[in-house]
Image (cartoon, rainbow, N blue to C red; front, side, top):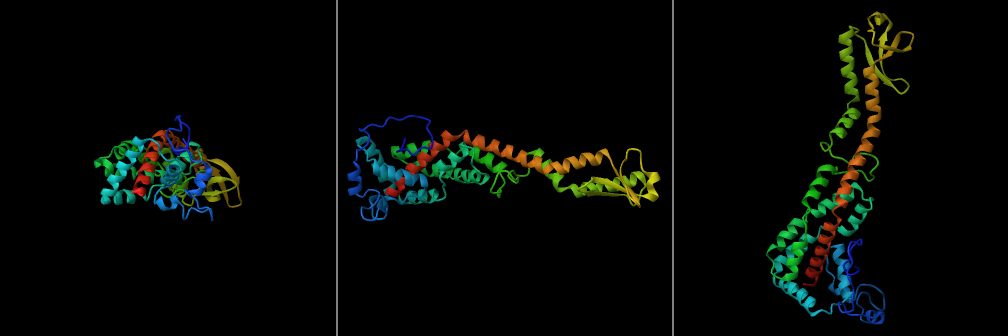
Length: 317
């Protein structure tokens, strides 16, 4: 599994000395495979010469290939045939290399997704990367070598996961997942309704005030809010005789009285708790999307491994 660079154990492969050349540490050091003897840096090593990979997965795999040379003639020939095709088709190689440029570290992203630590920005990065899978697969559709054909067949576009993330997650989410602003408008009716309650509190007050003035005939009736009493209706003393029976007296002042109604109490509960409720609901929806993406880990791993091989082959070519 160290050679494949997979991020979690979901299958076991047997590692035998018949697969790879056994290299002692002294040989690795003297051959300067991955670092120079003098400065212990990558620059000047064989890996430095060979590594023109464009992705983090490709870089890890390139190092693994250098450190674990193949012994199987058949496996070596498979790589050589793929390299021959890429060397001979410079247009295809250029297009593949360009298409790999924007691919993020799928393995690391999926690790955060699976362990529940991925942010909304991580999910968007995953979706942006996954959108590139289909074009790469299309570029490989006409290849002839067995290894490149295998890579093509193992690339999974994961279009449904991309669509889910893109439809649910806000394009510019906050850095943390506990402050709201994660979910797009239109994804959840309940979130949209709570946001409307948060943003339209003033509009609701104006609507109630206009309606109550017409119903009671009290022209100077006011619907107001303060932190002590919440929402209330204020009526001056000269109009107290017109106050309807469903008004509940809350406070008496020198020139007026303040009342509440069941409607205002319900509005207050909706508006004042909407923020907390929408933050919690958005997190639950976001976590649901994250868990659905996590459920596709095997498909993402398979595609990441295929893209890593493609990246290394293009680099060697």
